[in-house]
Length: 377
Ligand SMILES: [Zn+2]
Image 1 (cartoon, rainbow, N blue to C red):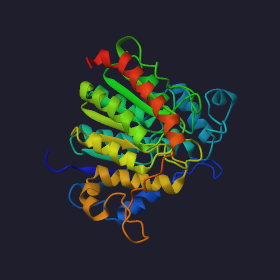
Image 2: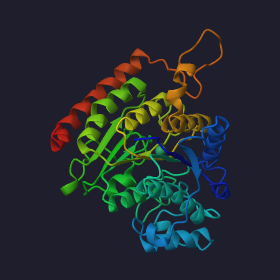
Image 3: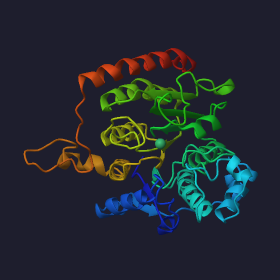
Image 4: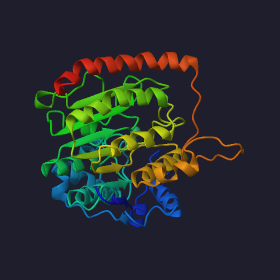
């Protein structure tokens, strides 16, 4: 494949549109990720560079969103807010109206779409836009902190060019906006691993939601019990996701990298370390196809920033180069943590093991029975 080209997407312009201070979604995360990876020298040199988000025309947004919704979103953003907008989820506590909301959402989307463009042009093998990942936005509804669904749009644009797209969503919440956008299609396979929807927003993403018509078997939902830990998560990933990728044979991956599945996230209840994120990306890289990664949730800011910095270091090939120095996650003799960006391993109690593993094994069994045969597995 020659030298891999990895592109990190950011622009100071993104800093102009923060959510209200009391809102959990904090756009400072992307800025801090960039600072860390820049200080590590991971934004330049052979095979690594930066790009800025591109401008996105309304006609492109309309591939996914209705004209009526985009109009209401822009008007609300400019202070012209009405009941019709509220009916579309604009101006709720989750999706508040704030200054520059529309321009900020479009710019963040432009970060993901410039990545799709670079991949289509053969100019990038891995792209990371930590300012993207708004997987809950619907064609005519703002939802779950999301206004414009950059990842659904990226999948659409890649599919329009004839690519087989594998959308993988590791955010702790079900990637509903993307899953339902392609529910009846088989050129975009969506796989979402998330906390069991009985216990978390948005309340969808059960294992029996597998797509319909042509798309049956091309939507995969892997609900995870409260307390899911690294080993259990990777068992589900390796038993289900890897064979499905192998069977689907994607041309490109779109990855929603919400970091709210990490232990200590204030909005969710899983117990992962960022080593899972590194392992998942490592597995995707082994397929030697381009990866378009976007951010997403992640409400423990420090943990999210470290996970995304680690994700970038894996995507751009630096993490494997560093392994022999950093001993990825191993405690050395001193009291200093020598794992670099890698989290320490978390202890798992027997009680946790007994609560989590049987549920995961059940889910694996169910999906193997319902989805695998459709793919000849
Ligand atoms: Zn989330």
